[in-house]
Each structure stands twice: as structure tokens, then as C-alpha cells.
Length: 453
Image 1 (tube, rainbow, N blue to C red):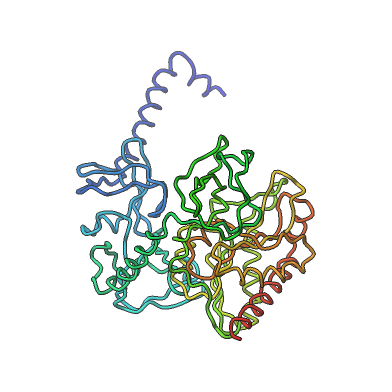
Image 2: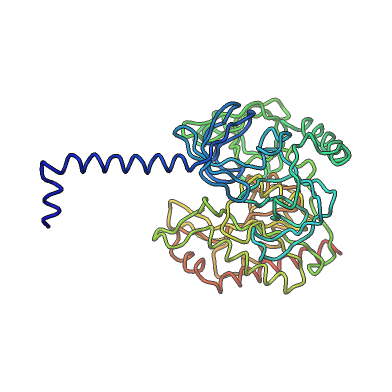
């Protein structure tokens, strides 16, 4: 106690404070000196929030900038630049041909295993052969994520070469480009042609569901889209013209654009479910929790993943090959999900979701389709879901990205409302997941049998 009093006395406190400041300053200088500095020698290096090429950009570094390297892990530099802190790939620094960390292909140098998740202890779903060029979705912490014919897969960055899209041999992309050019020409020809997929819809004289009705629209009626406008609440309406020159407004969410159907497979014929490949997409994931129950105990992203894993068990028991777009709590963009399906040989793509509503009495399951060619698949599965102890809202047209941009037979299932207390009991029950799985297996079995006849 006497020592403390002496330190804070008028005689000893000023020199003590000076020594303390010097000590702190020395530690700070030592910390700065321990960082390695690096001078950026070209433009195009992006400092990102996390060590991943799909992470948010913090700042673009330019030639001549000097950064302090805090650490290097899994091919990524953790760096400090001025007041900014972030990550940039060391593999881009070492490869002058990579002008960006985007639009990159993996050059397969040796036969390379592809894993179900970014973990070498996870299941191997396929193997890439030496000589291939594979477009990557993103690179993160030493792992590449790519959409392959077997679904979204992961492989080690250190096993491959990374090249820009321009460096890929023309023979690898020539056929793909020719096919895409013909499809694009067809899309442009149908760009402004829309068809109404829902019953009991109206053509309004203004962009509002409360506007006067010009006439009732027939299901499958086609229009030319003149413009897209919004009402006061931000709801989109298509300003359209019918075959008689009559113009009006329809809700854009109810409109299917024929250009989106170009290249859609429609249906496959595996012969039976035993020979079918099914892709299951557990909705949301990672930073996107989806709907959250009112007590905040249940997240949609967790419920969809748990449901998907049970469905996979039932489908595999029926003999089908199953691909999950994700098998862990990770985020995939809507584009990545659709691209994974398009790159696959799936006979059916099913996206799983649990609904949410402002109104707690909203309830039940709903089966959504976008492409008219997928209606029979939707109907077959919904017929089985309707047998569950849950209200069924039937089969509906749904303008959802993962099924609209999907070239494989594709559905989106809403399997109950997180906001409904009765539905939530089922959503939290593994036995409900098994009931849903049995319904989906039966629906797919009936559908494939009908296609084979």
C-alpha cells in the first residue's frame, strides 16, 4: 500500500507516467515493426472483409500502395492499409496473369478429389481429371467452390492452377459459346412476351390492385410488355398490351416471361426413381437465416437443412442419387444455386423453405413452379403433400429466382409457416420431416412412372 502511495505522490508520479507512456509506445512500435510490408505492383488487388473472393470489398489497392501484412493463412494475406483492415489473395499477387480475383477458372493439373464440404474428411462426390478447366464460383481460405454436374463441390486451391477466363483454351469454351449464342438469340426474340400463369387475374387501368379493372385475364393469356412500373408501395406492375392493342397493368409477380423458358429441360425420363438424380436445396444458410420464429429459437435455414438431410435418407433408400446444394450452414447466392442445378444432370430440383407472414393465422404447405413444363411435377408432389396433417394451399405459379433461372425441372416448396404456432410445432418435429420426405418420394415415384409410360 505504501508503494502505491509513493507512485501516486507528486514526487514519483510524473516520472512513472513518462516511463509508462514510453513503454506503451515501444510496444506499439514493436508491433508495427513486426508486420511485414508489401508494395503492391499492379492494379486490381481488392482488400476484402474476409478471406474469400465473394466477401465484401473494403477498398481496391492500386500500384504503388504499401500495405502491412499481419499474417498469411491458406493463401490469403491479412493486411492493414491506412485505416483499412482486410484480406487479399497471395495467389493473385504471385500470378501476374490474374488481373482480378473474379471470373477465374481452375486448371486441373492432377486428378483432384471434389468434396461435399470444404473439409477433407467429408465425402468425395466426384473427381476432376487432369487437363480440365473448371469455372469457379469463389475461393475461400484455400478452398475452391464450383458448380459441377454432381452439384456444388469443394476442392483444394493448392492442387490446381488458377487462370483468368481469357486464358482458357478456346476449344474448352467454343461449343458452349455457340450453344449460348443460339439460345440468346431466341431469348431476345421472346424478351418482351409475357404469359399469365395464375387464374382470376385482372388487367388494371393503373398500376394498383385497387385500380379499375379493364377485364378479367384468361390463364395462359399472352401480352407484350411495354414497361415495368411501381406503385406507391414499391410493388412492380407490368404495363402490357394484348393482341387487340388494349393496354393496361398486371402484377409483375404473376407474369412469366417466355424468354426465361428458353433452354429449360422441361422433363427427363430416368425410367424410375431408382435411376433418378434429385437435387435438394435447403433454403437460406450462413449469413441469411431466412424466417425466424417469434421466440427466436428456430431459424428457417436450420429447419430446411435438417429437412433436406432426412429427405436425402429417404430418397437414397428408394434408390435415387441425391445432391444437396449445401450440407452445412453456409451461404450460397441465388445465382450460385441456380447455376449448380443448371450444371447438374438432375432429373428434379426441389428448393425447401418455411414460410412467414405478418398474420399468425397464415398456414400450410404450398408447391410453387415457374415453368409450365414443370406443372405436372409440381402437381404430383403436391398431391402427396396434401395428405399431410397440415393445410395445403395447392400448386401455384411462383416467380422465384432459383426456379425461374433453373433449366432443370424445378420446384420450390413452402412446408409451413414459421409465424403460425400450430405449423411451428411440426416445423420443430423430426417426425414431420420424415412425413414430408415420404410424400416427396411418393410424388417423385408417381411422376417418373407417369413419364416412363
